[in-house]
Length: 398
Ligand SMILES: Cc1ncc(COP(=O)(O)O)c(C=O)c1O
Image (cartoon, rainbow, N blue to C red; front, side, top):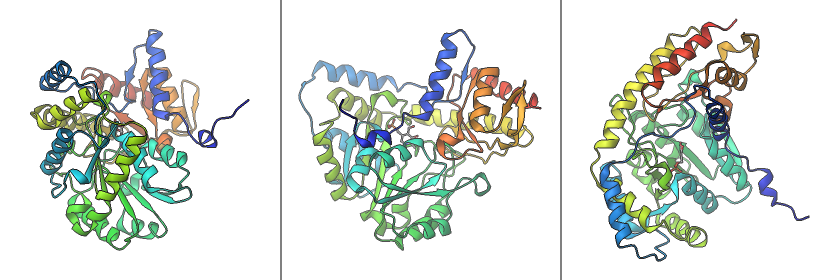
């Protein structure tokens, strides 16, 4: 009997999908489920995106396209970068892929040999670990608990970087929703300048979802000399409500964009023509949908935060972006709900789902077992219902 490649013993299906799957099954069985589990924006793009797709269908060439991405898409992304404050890039600095997940995977292939070290903060987006394991990289995990607002400190970064090949940074953050201020970015950038052999991947796909006027800031603007080794990752998934369309981007040094394009030529070939038209329309069309959703998410963040802060013992740093809240619920450990023992975050999420029909992702999926992730993009009427059930669940712990 032939065997699978050894790397498949390191590859695991997504833990987030597992919770979503269980919630789906309960729903199919007739339970009233509120899903706070999956990180999808839950809105559709503007009509101009669909109009562009219809037009593209009418003149579809049906041919293979550019491995880097169609010029129109590269140009639309370059303009998008400029609007977000990242200037000075040309078509040679950018490339496209099948969503940020594929983009990150490609970058791991392009930058990491087996045994090289990649460093990133904990809590992390689950896929970072999965990708590192598949490419057989060593991981240096930098713990950022609730007590430090889930944020990396300059001293911590400085101590961690010797021997690291790639530093992977995520701002605004999934799962915590935390956003680094201009000063915090500047302080981390100063540290990065001291470590010239480290590539820096900035997974900034939530950069248009920042609240409270904090703004989105990046290392390249803080210290322009970092431009030669910072790779910015972006995507249309969250900003434009288009996760299923699968378009992601990089902007960085020409050498990296070229390597990325070579990898594309050996697997995906190109982002499809119709999808390209949709992405160009999203990036260059009216920006009222993302702006309106950002305002809506800020109001929801307030609702969720108020609910968490009203529960004695729950510690919840204030997120300022994306659409996640990451409360530390470890005060519940050692208690029971209706006789069901809660020893850890997984027990908590299972009991909450079984008893109250509320699905959240256990923090251990993100490397932080004291917490859980609430994604608050569910239909508006579900949010107060889910939060009330969450409160009830806590009140019933004994
Ligand atoms: C931090 C982060 N990076 C990347 C991705 C992947 O996004 P995409 O849909 O573009 O593959 C996600 C999706 O949840 C994410 O949260």
